Amino acid sequence: MDSITDKAEQLRHKISQAEKELQDLRMQLEELESTTRNLNTNQQLGSTSESAHPTDTIPEWKWPLSEEEYSRYGRQLILPTVGINGQLHLKSAAVLIVGAGGLGCPAAAYLAGAGVGTLGVVDGDTVEVSNLHRQIAHSTQRVGMMKVDSLIEYCRGLNPVVSYVAHREHLTPQNSEAIVSEYDLVLDCTDHPTSRYLISDICVLLRKPLVSASALRTDGQLIVLNSPPTAQGSTEGGPCYRCIFPKPPPAESVVSCGEGGILGPVVGVMGVLQALEAIKLIVTGVGKDSNSTPKDPIAPSLLLFSATSTTPFRSIRMRSRRPNCFACSTGSTLTLKELRAGSLDYVQFCGVAKPVDVLKPEERVSAKEYNDILTKQPDKDHLLLDVREKEHFEIASIPGAINVPFSTIQTRSKTSTDDDSLASEYIPKSLSAHAPIYVICRVGNDSQLVTKRLKEIGLDANGERFVGDIEGGMLAWKRHVDQTMPFT
Amino acid sequence: MSTATETVPAPTQVEIPKISIDVEFTGGLEMLFSDQRRHTISLPAANKDGKPATIADLIHYLCEHTMKDARKDLFVLQDHLRPGILVLINDADWELEGEEAYEIQAGDNILFVSTLHGG
Ligand SMILES: [Zn+2]
Image 1 (cartoon, rainbow over the protein chains, first blue to last red):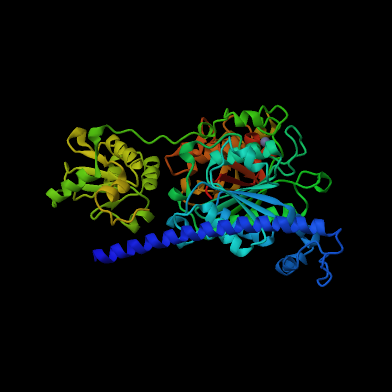
Image 2: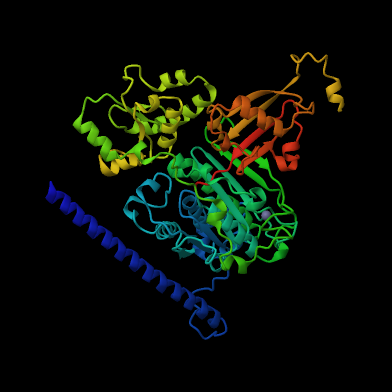
């Protein structure tokens, strides 16, 4: 067995090294090609006057797109909404995708396919296996690679004509001006309020339209912001993110895809729609000469997508710019200088969820301690209450655990005033009066709240029965006791 | 006193006129409301001061009668809707309609949307 694992490990190592080499070679080739491309254009420019050049054999190509581009984009070129002018606008557009995840992958793919001139991607993360069910541009082989490189590699396979720019870092107040100023249009494909406020602010300051989308579980939202991207104080411009959401949500209410879950096609739909909105803006000439940009503010609308609803798509009319908006109003004090200086603390502005800390050390046992109890006294009368949601519990649980989901406890605590009846719902009748109760959850927050609640309703029999939680939850159990336990 | 209160028949208390509206929750808020997206609500047409019911009254009513979850602060903070929730009245942002002061009409569709951040 061991020799097989060793061999597999060696092979894996060799593969990853070969991949690194391959990537390196590709990058060298890309650099070489881009320099020759520039040389060619320069030569062409120079050669037009030199009629003596032996170009007579090949007739001069006198069309604005290359022959390959006519074939490649033919199917969209013949649409009235695109046309040759729209395609030329696409070709001269530089689009920035912030976030190479579930939204960024499909958005980048369609924009690359459509033939934008330059596609930039910003992300500081690397590909993980748990990304692959929705972040379709990455691949199993590219786990561990920078997401930016993986996404660009995918897009280059789709369309090598586009020039790609990799920004292998997260967007920060310090680097945002340098990065965003190189582009005409920005797509917010990130996954946290802190980045959403930052991206909106820099787009207001640099006057870039912003296509923003988000998704969680089976829902998605899409809105085009700062369009048209008029100067701060102008009422002609479209609203910014802060006009719609002046105050960030409390950190405790922010649920990530990791915690709440996400269905691949849901976030995929939203990313595809972002690409669509971007293409619609670009073909009308956004970011180009001001006389072609629409004069009237586009009536802003928020698109809501609910995969499980009978009406999955709903469009909502939204407000225009907020007269007292922190970022885009006349009275705004937001400046590039201030942003660069770091005087806006986005993390502090959005807040950080504090870890729950309501139990005393003697009310908690470690995963190891609980396991020791089980090993030494296998028949010990006790209750292990698993308060994760049903879906988590059904995937894997500690043998003997009883599942009462946290949300059920929340509901029952509100609707029932009778503590005794509440207790009998959670506690099996067979449990003897002084048998200890251990509460476990996913990472050790909810379990503390439930423990506290169980004591409030008198289950600790005035201290005669131990009621406590397992510190660190199922994550600690996996780390310190049973590594084979799937953790979700 | 508005004329609306005068039309209320004798002060029998039992006969408070109700208005029927559709209330919807999305973006995860439905989890606070029995995992049900759509609720038909019979809202008292007037609040305790005898004024026509507004969105503020509806929010209060939802907390008291419809929400089955104890985590009220995921919906309301300091007596107002918590930041990060949009209210849409008949498919328009409530800011176009007067926000909390909007007087609810029978048959209105009021949608509460929690903003999502994932991507
Ligand atoms: Zn604004």
